Amino acid sequence: MRYLLIFALLVLFASCQNEKEQFSADEIINKTIATAGGDTYKKATIDFKFRENKYKSVRNGGEFLLEREIKDSLDTIRDVVSNTGYQRFLNDSLITVPDSMMVKYISSVNSVHYFAHLPYGLNDKAVNKELVGDAEINGMPYYQLKVTFSQNGGGTDHHDEFLYWIHKENFTIDYLAYKFHINEGGLRFREAYNPRVIEGIRFVDYKNYTQEDFNTDLCQLDELFEEGKLKLLSNIETEDVKVILKKS
Image (cartoon, rainbow, N blue to C red; front, side, top):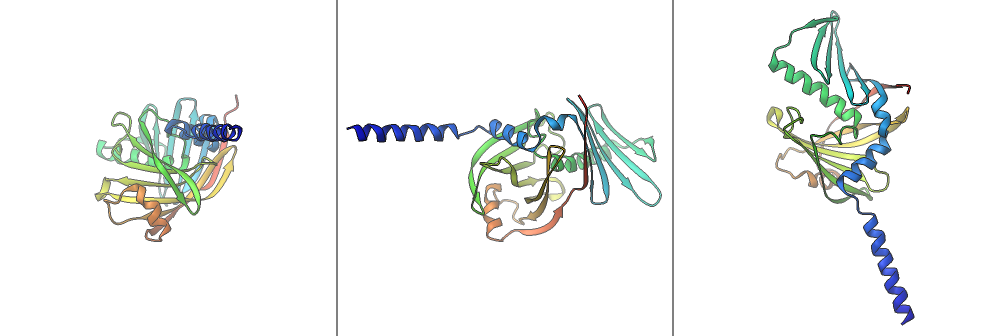
């Protein structure tokens, strides 16, 4: 009888332990952001280079400014997105941009900064998070977390869908996938590599894969990746990353 009681207690203890390990989508994202830098993002100025263009983000609490600088042999174009709107400068002179092009430029600037700064931004008000399952890639355990965006505050690409594979122990985004609808649409799967920490903030680069069948469920892309059925398109690399922290 005593052994039965001990066994029952052990089963109950194991069950309680498993319950403690179950996290909500919000808790997983909070832990992932904390692992990558947490509140350090809120006081950081980040400079980096991506595909020959220079990018800069400045954050001070809830205020932000995102920049892109494009240079050629004659001119310098600087796009600035902030809490107060959008501006384009040609050789330091403010110029007028048609609304149709403004939407395109804002989306382009936001996209590069979004991926460079992940997972920061996944707690924005427009972000909808859902824990959709578990997965294993290369023998490692992952949470599958789906992200969509509300129309209000979600930008012009609010209808896009994202899926993140977050390591269950390290709370890092090692893989991600997304389905986009602009330019006839497409699917992408990204494998993170080259992780490094600069002034307390974690950065990674990505191997960028595609899947031709647009109707493929994002949750299936990890299996297709392991089976070698995804096509490598490019490497997404942020170079010359510099971080300056605002002093308190």
